[in-house]
Image 1 (cartoon, protein in one colour):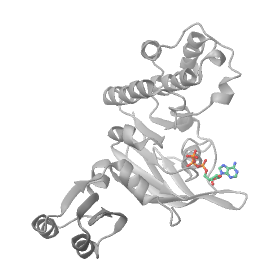
Image 2 (image 1 turned 180 degrees about the vertical axis):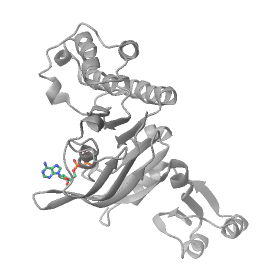
Image 3 (image 1 turned 135 degrees about the vertical axis):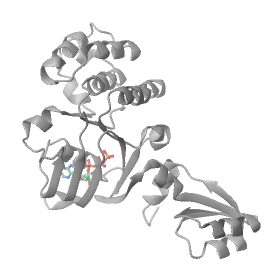
Length: 293
Ligand SMILES: Nc1ncnc2c1ncn2[C@@H]1O[C@H](COP(=O)(O)OP(=O)(O)OP(=O)(O)O)[C@@H](O)[C@H]1O
């Protein structure tokens, strides 16, 4: 089971400051959506609306055909995992006790899978949750998020404190379990380069607005770099959407957002201009660059 989401002109304000500014998008059910945005872009605010933690100030939000706010069915089927290090300081139950209790709150919670994950993440079962290290607390949260198998599963920078090998286990588990038990997953992150292979679709936000939304494949296909002599690149790129440029001696390299026609590609090849691919990380960095950076 997985939920589709449709947001229309959703806005959220904090005392007059617009954190989410009339955003509209659709998230397809059963896909992994990467939510990318810089610090303060509005990711957590948006996710707290999608998980019905807070009500939008304007616009409409429909999840699986209904408004999720104060909606017991949708709320029970939504899991929102975020960095709860502070709250977990006051959780005195042991890891195994907590995991056993989860089945009362989460209709699809798979206890056997949760304990399998405990082994993979090497969590000490009989330690109290508040005594876990930072990374293990995040792993504990990730286990709840995964084993809940909720139709709408939201991970908001849920990897905080996990070391690189642990994050790798987390990412692989998302992919593997999603394949067997498809659900709608939204995964917000700054660590774009290491997590980009997870995403079916990408929603990029900037200053509270949607910058782009497309399949991961489409987004990546729209970015490329051109490298050649300064004069050649200047001439070739004058009508292109250049995001960034670098000059090294007589060589110039530009990052471009858009698509090259077959004719342009042939012309570039003939002129000896090198066409390179860009990663989602490169595009994210270039597309969200501020004027003074
Ligand atoms: N409770 C609040 N009161 C006032 N402003 C807030 C509040 N929470 C968030 N904001 C502001 O709203 C904007 C969006 O914040 P949000 O936490 O949603 O961003 P984010 O993309 O999750 O950032 P980060 O990547 O740094 O976690 C920021 O400018 C932030 O300062």
